[in-house]
Length: 163
Ligand code: PNS
Image (tube, rainbow, N blue to C red; front, side):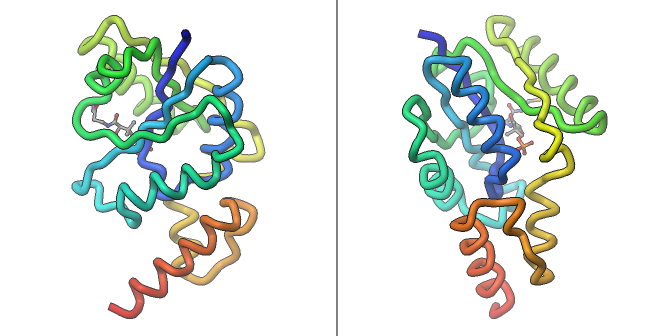
């Protein structure tokens, strides 16, 4: 059985992530979406919220599991016996960071490869960070995230403003 991990922060999941999930789920038998649990990154959504949102927007896919992880990605990959890690590449600006990460991971665990899917052109500009910024200023994010994520973002921004 060919199993891969698609890791990320998913804070929150966007149409760009979903595009990579959809395309990679066709290549492998089982795709584990690994959700980083790292409070040092100060995520807007808790790991439980990010997992729940991913479960909701991927519920129609049959070969996907959403699993939170802490610590090193290669340890997580080893634990799951995943054949490779999948990452999406948007523009050239992603390349340096992604190259460094994949080469470091390969040094740490030569048995785990990283495979890159280039993001579909319509999502090449999209990031969770810009979506959060647009939402924070009350902008329309409906073309960037599924409706349920847009609602969750609006709620979160309301809570943030009230504290
Ligand atoms: O969505 P992101 O924030 O770009 O995802 C980054 C992620 C989660 C893939 C990366 O930060 C990661 O793998 N973190 C786990 C810690 C780790 O293994 N670090 C060494 C890799 S260089």
